[in-house]
Image 1 (cartoon, rainbow, N blue to C red):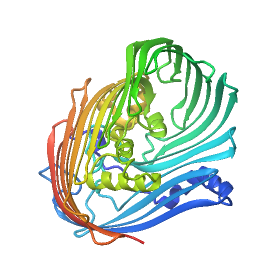
Image 2 (image 1 turned 180 degrees about the vertical axis):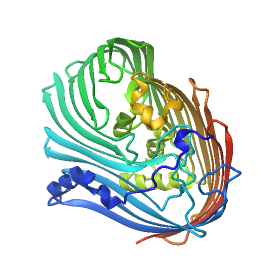
Image 3 (image 1 turned 60 degrees about the vertical axis):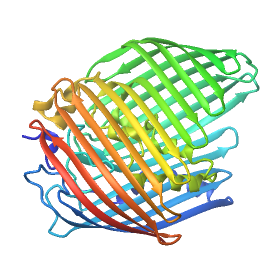
Image 4 (image 1 turned 45 degrees about the horizontal axis):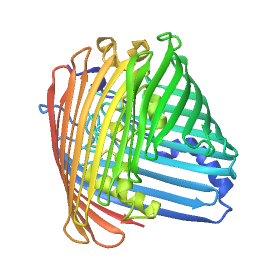
Length: 525
């Protein structure tokens, strides 16, 4: 038998128009700032893809059935900047037509959008950040995964949308200190009602030392977040932290922190709290190299952190380790620490000095190589629980005139802290402990070769493994993609892709494979 998440979930994919109310914070910012002189770039485009897949729904090998799929994808990108507003948005919808009728668990369409902006209300005093995004997300770490590969199956997927608006005040007290007061309201909602809708209100107070403190730096921070889940009640978190640094050398600072954390899980898990401390260093030998590391202890045991970056003319390197108490909704609203896009952004900085052009180049590279925009997208899955997450990530990128390569690695372990009752509907009684302790590892690699100014070839390989340490359930998936890209003009391009995917399903580890070939033509309008 297959796991509960392999059931046919509702295939209704709301169109972008249905999500427009969640873009209201950004629309308000635009209305305020539009009268000012601005630089705007609006880029509509449309893509037409014809694919033959021998297993479009990633069914088991015994049940797969091949057919042709036609895809039509209109897309709109908007970038704008002026003295008061920075805004960027991207939205696209893909419509699918199946030559032999839509299979069970196959999508009719798929929509994604992502928008963010910052509005300067009062110079050097009041600002507003806002963001909204939505798209397909995995329900379980152990069902078929379509991240960056197969786009047709609706099995183990749901449409998830989130938005947030965050006004904040900044105040400088001469050279002595600088303060920030931030309020944030956000919302997360999934089409799968077993995850449901939740909203939160949070406040963050931050006080930093100013330039008057030459060799000593300090920081005081307090945050509180109250979450109201439509189906599962309220929870809250409260964190206080004091940090101190001492400049031992012009390139080396020693750091120490102390704090206290309180997590109230409401009706599902009670309350945990305790003190924390850490000691470490920050090393910046050059403008292109930075290392921050610490080790310490909090109420859950020993802990540590690492963030290391290095950039040369043709390479970019990044590695991190974090240990935190978090939740699925928090990661959807705040994002992951390291993502492929930010790595490539630093690598392409010299080639594309304009941030808008650079963003477009990064997105094109990621799409053609089949890389995940955010490494954490491969990790995240729906759970209503709080958990302790230990996450290690490493990325490296290389770019020359004709050659380019990207490598990403991750290892993640999640230990549930709150009660599993809030996930009983998501998983069912037979899989009650599935989200108690989950370990995931994965890697992706891509190599591209530019044959000439108009033609390039890309090969990419992605492999992931998810393991439930309580139930011993495992799920593996590997995907190989080969792409040939041709630019026919400044606004027209084409791609031919070969794809091979294999993985495992459910308790009986039934194998599935997919082989596909597709051709895409894209035109900017």
